[in-house]
Every structure is written in C-alpha cells, then in structure tokens.
Length: 423
Ligand SMILES: Cc1cc2nc3c(=O)[nH]c(=O)nc-3n(C[C@H](O)[C@H](O)[C@H](O)COP(=O)(O)OP(=O)(O)OC[C@H]3O[C@@H](n4cnc5c(N)ncnc54)[C@H](O)[C@@H]3O)c2cc1C
Image (cartoon, rainbow, N blue to C red; front, side):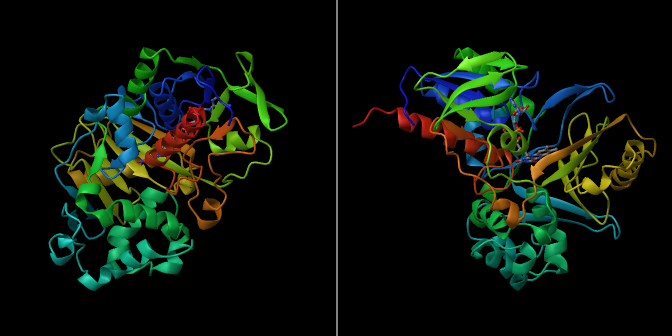
C-alpha cells in the first residue's frame, strides 16, 4: 500500500469497526475522514431515546466478557471504561421456567478450574468428567458443526453450553462453527473467571463505545460526515481512484487509502467479486420500563421459556432472544405479552405489563456456521489502497464487538505499517 504521512484515510462506516480504525489512525497522527450513511454513529450497536418506553434503550443488550481485550482497550483509549459495570466475579445465574429450579455457574478467577471440583459452582446434575467435551471443543481441529464435535444433549449442554453458545454465535449451536466456539472458549473460559466476567453497560452501550469515540475523534480534528453514503468505489487498475458519496465525489490522491467498514451485504454490493458471508441471523430484544434490580440479578439465563436472557438495568428490564428469525412475524404485542408473563413470573412482579418496546434486528450477525465462516475475507483486498473492517471479516471470532474492534485495529495497523518509513 503506497502511502505517506500526508495521506488522507477515508473510513466508510461508523460502527465499532470504523470507529476503532479511526481512533487508532488519529492516534498515529494520520488524517482521517469518516463517512457514515446514517444520521448517527454506532451501526448495530446503538443507544437511543425510545418514545414507547420513555427511556434510553439499546437496539440490543450488548454484553462483553472481561477477556475482550481489544474492546476494553478501545474503551480505555476513549476514556469510557467506567461506563461498564465491573462485577466482582464471573457468575452466570440461570432459572428453569418449567421446574422453577435456579442455579449459578460461578467460575474462579485463576486459570486452574477449581469451580469444576465444587458441585455448588458447576452446573447441577453434572460431574467433573462431563466437562471433558469443553476441552474437546476448545482443541478441535478444522471447522465442523459443533454438533459433530460434542454431544448436544445432557445437563451441561442444555444448562450452560447451549445458552452461552447460542448467545455468542447467534446461531443454533448444533450447526454453529466449532472453530469460532473454540476461539471463544480459549479466550475466556479456558483462561479462568478473570477473563469471563460479564460486563454490561451502565447507561447504554452507545455511551461506552459510540458517543465517547465520536467526541474523541472530533477532539482530534477528525471530520465525521453523517448522511454521507458511499454509493460506488471508482476503480483505476489495482487502485481505488475516487469515492462516490452522497455528499459528492472525492478523488483520492496517490497515497490516500480507504477502510471499508460497512456490513457484509453492503460491502458485497460495493466491491465486485468480494467473498463475504451471505447468510444472517436476527436478534430480538424486548424492553420493559420497570425497575426490577431488587427482584432480578443484572443478567439471568432462562431455560424452557421463550426468553433466553433477562437483563435488569436500573430503569428497565430487557429480554434477548438470539437466532430469533422464527419470531419476526409474531405480532409485537403478542411477543411482549409472552415475555412479560415470563419476566413477571420469574421476578414476582405484577401481571400488568409496563410500557414496552420490541426491537427486531433482522441481519444482526452473519450465521456463524462453518460454511459462512469460510467466506470471511481478510482485511486486504485486491485493491492496494482498499482495506476491509467489520465483524464479518476474518477476525477468528464470531460477530461481536470484540471482533469488530479488532478488525478496525487491524486495518489501521496495516495502514500505519505501510506508512512507516523504511528502516
Ligand atoms: C441486537 C444485537 C445484539 C448484539 N449483542 C451483542 C453482544 O451482546 N455482544 C457482542 O459482542 N456483540 C453483539 N452484537 C454484535 C455487535 O453489535 C456487532 O458485532 C458490531 O456492532 C458490528 O460492528 P461493525 O462496525 O462491524 O458493523 P456495523 O455496526 O454494522 O457498522 C457499519 C456502519 O456502516 C454504515 N454503512 C453501511 N453502508 C454504508 C455506506 N454505503 N456508506 C457509509 N456508511 C455505511 C452503517 O450505517 C453502520 O453505521 C449484537 C448485535 C445486535 C444487532
């Protein structure tokens, strides 16, 4: 990538991948311009005021784990790390709606898994040997459906592995990629509880990763152009020569470069011949305007219900369903009613449903199957001054905030390396 210190780097898209790339580049002293099609930043990770509930809500509750080092490094850089709760242990409480049984899986912090030797900390009805498949999954070679590597039945699977993998992959675990599951396990559970404390945003995920990033970039003179959609990349041989944007056409200088940090389906339209994931899965969130911190833990896994995870925020309760396409045609009020019945039963709250909102994200993530995982491209493209970023690129992780941030950092690093004067 021919480049120089005076080059302008155009970042297309202000989701977490684009923001992370822009922050890294501006820290390296580069001139950066961000072009965002929407009128606000954040992409699939947004916090906004919702009329129906009268509250600030997230498009979906976003959870990080303490092993998500790139995302936490990004938050540290933009000064928003304190916007995430710091739980003092790695604990995952569950409830079974059918039996009423409650339990918590509680990992010890150190690498040696003492929790597996303590039946009060591991999954009820499991013994130590039941956990061997976790190691088999973490060490599995190649990429196969998880269902081909471990037995998708039994208490450990039903009560721990399935809810965790479904949330992390946003794909039915049986068909999910063993390679992506292995990467997750190796970066979190295998390293001990210190790496898998669940981190939730105190006042909304956008207040941690989006607003502070925009302030940080503006403070460093980075131009952020909203409502500025990239409609075409103008090619000249092996280079991108100009950008057609809704704000007008921008000619690129010999050393200028582009980081395309848009979702997979948008990138596939803009870059002819690009290999990219083609299948996506939805996520559904229902928010209820009720304060229930006394009645619910911050995060609760639900078995044998329609709800999968319940999150108790200070002013609202949010319910998440992953791989949720099967519910997208269900009337909104019916869904809200079903989920409220479950929440009120679990938390002992009144039957009367509080104000609510349903948020459906149809293409929340790519389908994390082995076949789709193989379609993920690297950062570099056939064009010498065009790089890709986004949770759908070959990050080695499922579509997550961590993957998005890593992809942005990687694209920025490739540009700064190319710009470094030869030794
Ligand atoms: C409901 C939901 C729940 C989630 N939960 C979690 C979770 O708990 N934990 C977790 O780690 N991850 C979670 N994720 C995934 C996480 O949100 C994504 O991985 C991450 O936000 C993707 O960031 P990105 O920058 O790659 O893409 P995006 O956020 O999609 O950003 C792309 C940006 O490009 C812009 N754009 C598109 N086309 C153009 C164009 N032509 N010109 C200019 N701009 C353009 C878009 O407007 C957008 O702002 C969740 C996602 C959803 C939807």
